[in-house]
Length: 373
Image 1 (cartoon, rainbow, N blue to C red):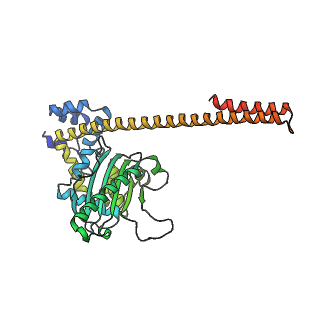
Image 2: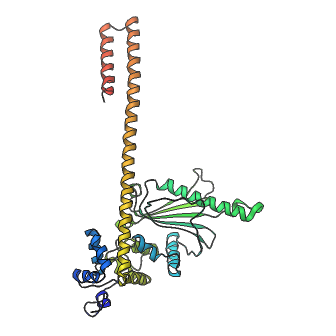
Image 3: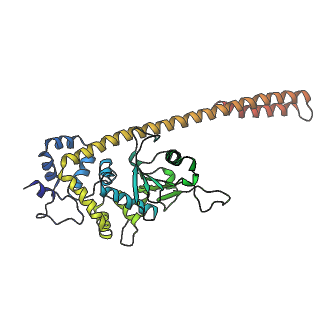
């Protein structure tokens, strides 16, 4: 039996509803990997959960995660016409209007760099109307998404300003500046984004509290899309679904039934799933994809743990600082109470010594309880 028969065994099993590999069993998959010694060695080094995921993909039981770094970058390859058109379609769905990309912008100059990033894709394009779109795909949403978005957008606006100022010289006007869309898709989003039930897309548009400039949102607009929230809200895709729901389903679904429904409603995704299925024809490339993904996951998890530990340290330091301030205030209150008591004892106006002593005792007991914390 040939390798292709193992991969797409149409004579031995029914053709799957979606273009997925169709090995007959786990043993058949592993026999195929063993015929490629390097692949087999890498396969044995994968954790059992990832081995199982790979087996299920090869048997057509589930799709491959689109958000895997290598998979995502191959599908949305900015160096290919096909990947170029896919990014245009995704952007059009997000911005709710037909867009055409006129050029990809280089990530250089003042562009900030981050090591061990959770970002899968980060591209900057200019659209036909001269506006810019910065598109990110994050595995794990950053803890400070708004501040980070502000920094990125500010960087892009300044790059645009410097270029326009250089090209136009004395004829430059701020009216020559164009809007920047900061679009961030998150596979796992921070908890703040889950505080609004039934919402998976969040748009941030600057505005005045007085209502002026109602028709202008300034030079930037932020769009955060939470794939985890989307999965919990939109469970089925039909022909009545919109293009954005189709793309977000594609980015988040591995269940064969959901993928089948997506292809039935939006047949244009069939060719993309066929491209993913064809990864199996080159097992070396497929196993290297997963090995790279495992490395990235390990680095990201390490970074996440460090970030969470730092948050805990910061919280503990703040708590200690708050206790110190409270203790200092208590000392001040105690000293003031002692002084007040001495004044009262000297004046003895309308209070007996016993009343003064009792009041002092209660005050000291309260203050000492604070100091003992």
